[in-house]
Image (cartoon, rainbow over all chains, first blue to last red; front, side, top):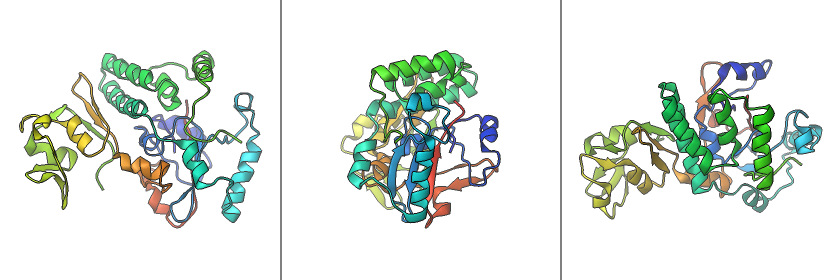
Length: 181
Length: 122
């Protein structure tokens, strides 16, 4: 599920993958599941129960220097769940880890969608007004702040990434879910 | 199921166009959709029948909403949908376009384990 509107870029990631790859350009799922960064992984069982909350489990070690987590350990947890249904967290753990979106984070998602629409219509000024407002409302939500960068022609990596990372770090790296473990 | 996300051209709507825009109608018994009605305590606060306040109406439906000076008004999903995920731990269903040109819903794979992986190119 790509929190992204860049279908061509996502095709590159999806090569050789034979399960469904969904495009969430409007960030519907980040609102429904209180997702505030990528990667975020959620385990849903056969009865539609969420048995593992939003989890910043990485597919590779590309960001290991920031996360300090060996992705193999995370893959093993997912395999164990697939095979046996076992997870290590209780319902209370899950609820405590994710938490609800704040009203500001909720409203930021609305401004983000208005900005996208105005940008598609060629109203760059109106788009910037709404992207800025979204960023003010949810300063540490990466699905807002970082996702906006390429939509405004800016590089989401390198220096721009470090600026956001340092801001988030100063705020204690807020995240709606459990960090990589 | 009503649409989770709405993007409307104006911050107001007439009573006549309300059903087409948000799927609910203003009736004497309240704001109604099929057999379900939500009480409207202060009808005056919604504005004139020719220009009803969509943000206030969304509030009655427990949906977040905001208007921009361009007129565009975004309405988010009913908050109960996210409460299902974060409080009840029941995965809310959704459907999205997939890379094969189709639409895939979570419930297309019901009775199976599903691993949702949110990722991006950014």
